[in-house]
Image (cartoon, rainbow, N blue to C red; front, top):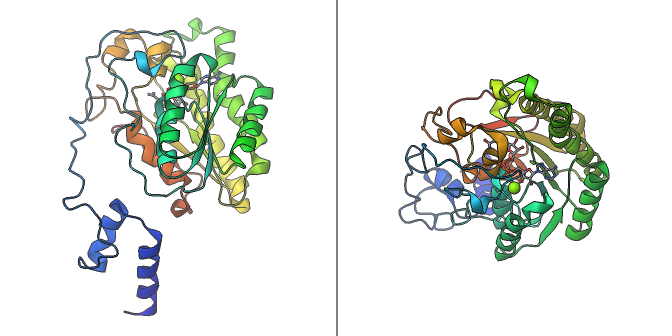
Length: 336
Ligand code: NAD
Ligand code: MG
């Protein structure tokens, strides 16, 4: 074994916990190496993405905005029972907006199980969902901080960041995930008030939040934005929303260039149709909802749990060369 191989092997053994990553490299190292042999006698079973989760048709359902996970049928999967951590974010301090439900909740559960302390922001009426997430974070043995408030208010965005920094003792992962989506068949149906609501939530709030957070972010920290396949291939009923997701994709790319030299990475996640409260509280028409996700190659919507590992990957040290990138997970469409 030459020096390079020894180093690589040492790094692999020292740097990786048990799990899939080890399973992936073990053939190179030799199956008899007990230090790296994963503790999965049979390995995780193969899961067929076409049958893994519920398919349309879905029951008609509608909730007042912003909707609650507990009132959805079927209940979305955020990885509550399935996500297994392996210390990838041990000691990190994360703030996730919209952390009560959907992609934000999936990221919060995964981050906590990877060893991070997590602050979640949510709209005050989402307290029941937020409580569940706080319990899940604490059950993972990590600190949970609940910060309710309206992101359309600049002063609140500043206070949210300060509260997170104070409670966590710093900040190194910021996930701008909260979003406002209301479907309207025609541009004529969108009032200036609605348009402004969407812009304030999806564009202004990340701008204010990032400005407040930046002085606290040390080299190695990350900013992650939730964009959408809508940024690339907008549907006609999401005129205002889709353009905010294009803006998110764009700020990720410009900020990545600005902050790269400071050692701060900025990336985005672009989901396709995902089964979350946003869709049942005005995000999709009833017709669309009943067949939600049927257009994907799997014939079903995604579940928030299916994106959790992307948020982890974009935050982890071992993803250190990824910046200005959009990671997609859309069931076969979208063009990140
Ligand atoms: P979700 O309803 O679970 O999450 C959205 C969250 O945004 C809410 O939980 C709420 O806490 C927060 N929020 C909205 N307005 C707020 C305000 N004024 N103040 C404070 N919090 C506010 O739904 P989700 O689908 O998980 O949404 C998360 C992100 O994913 C959003 O940015 C959304 O645009 C994006 N997205 C969703 C889909 C999808 O199909 N569900 C697809 C692509 C992108
Ligand atoms: Mg919610």
